[in-house]
Image (cartoon, rainbow, N blue to C red; front, side, top):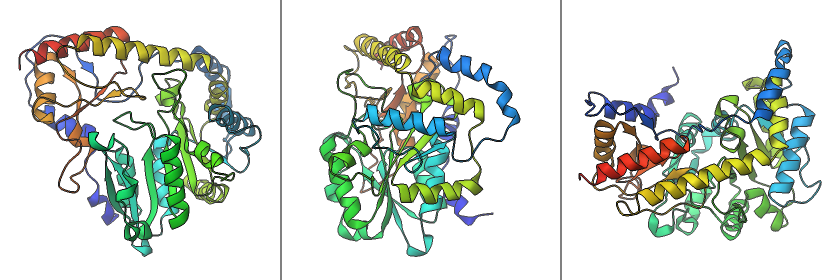
Length: 398
């Protein structure tokens, strides 16, 4: 077996399973899962319709590079959503459809990193665990950028020394952030691009939460948007990852894309011709419909907005936390150790939340996830309201 497999940490949900093992429920209340970021809103009818209509296409092998119509739909969406301007994203050179961004974020590092150079991969801390696993299995050393309340849960780029940049091949960022919901603005994104170009580092920007935001008139900016504003029209060293999972409530569709630097996209496509994760044709055609429609996305945001308002309102006199700019997570401090809080909340109220330390690593003498929990407001509104009421009851017993 690959000896690097032994370097992988247990996945956060495996740690949660171990934490809950042997816990005796003290209630007959039904279970509410707020631990995993799996959207539970209804599938948009336009996606369902195309999937059913195109089911016969499963008899054909799908093209590795994706249908031209899908690449075109993604290109137009990027140009409109991130104000890039018409014909600024070439469907043939800048776009590569992928089977969800999880597999792409992982395989991208395998294609990009030269392990013989003793490379570093920078990543946020806390983080989506795929970043770390991708770095380790590619033969790189993860280096963590601690995201704390003191730095507004954003990467402190000024803390990265020239020696670190010199060894760095790749930097993962998540914008908006998971689990914090913090958003890097255009100034910060441009600063990152400038550093990446100076030190010849590739940016892998996970933008999977870009369409879940509170202020309808202030969407989070994107990496390609920042590059374009800098005059970096070919998005040199910039690669973004996005998907329909959160935007369109279809995590099981496994539909996403990678976009950016055409030289990197070309080489990554070559890798993927062997890697073999290609979307089935019904999925691709349903994805065309989804990327071409914004009505269902606006309705989706409205549902999350209402859930955040009601959840925060119920807990206003019991638990102090800030509603994030974007995403569907809360990242509050816990009254005591995060693992104790999560275990006791499960035992007494049958609610699952994820301890923050499971999403973080000890770094620079601290663990930025310690004594926080991630709460995913993905359940229907009535379930989120129920959960908030139970959590308030729990807090009042502490």
